[in-house]
Image (cartoon, rainbow, N blue to C red):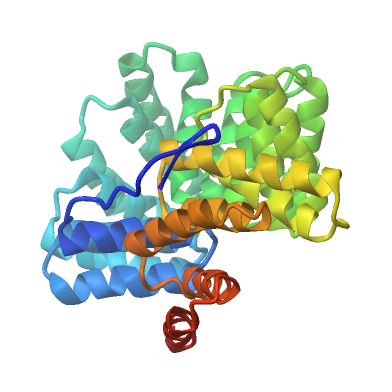
Length: 371
């Protein structure tokens, strides 16, 4: 393995981890690479090992929300609640999901259940108030929101906070309702505040409406040019929309504003897109500099959140820089972290073939083809 900032060290094999933890780590890595089918398969493999664990069903359901599969998410969260009915996260996620799928009457009992379990939570009461308002039950909505406001240190921003709180649940429609209610409570005067606009852009991104998210984040970057986080999120939206060159430009500008960033995904994608640019460039000093930048960004990502993807990025860059020993170390470490990744085996095959180690190359090729 490699320590970062161009400094190398001996590979470190991680201590043995429980199988369920390992599978979750691999599922999270697949999700970061937007390999949703692989992430689903890994969560399902976890469930085969412990099908009566409500936590596993909840984690599977939340991932399915992020994957944009609400029907399967609803089934998984329902299974979680059948095992652990007082899990407030699963309960809230299920209620919000039903709301977003226009099953308002079904959602009511679960929103009430969340209030019963978290009676002092202003957000639980605000969510119930939002449901009532959407059902046209204005009196009940006012009563519930009054209770929410009494518990909140900032009642004027409570609806906006609710909108932000459901973003991890990919609940775009509920976030929009809450944002509209917030604007209505403010009297609709003046331009929409930056915080609400950021929330809307993030809601679009969470709903996989990437082109719309790009438009919103581009305007936000114009209005708040000092915000590195907004440039990063614009980069992610562009990346997901398939606009690689523009995504890299946005990532680079984010890192120029926050050179000590500890965002591993930002660094990994910067490395990957820089590598793509290097591959498309003619040999020479410019290409060499690109590969060096790709390697250094990947090394930083490895220090923050080591994964097969980060070490693979290091290995590719080192191989392109003719640093064969370091490339093999990096690819070996990637293989230790995930020996199911066919891309890692493919690059090990190319590297060992270049080094004249034909038997090892043949073994790596067989593994790559098998996966």
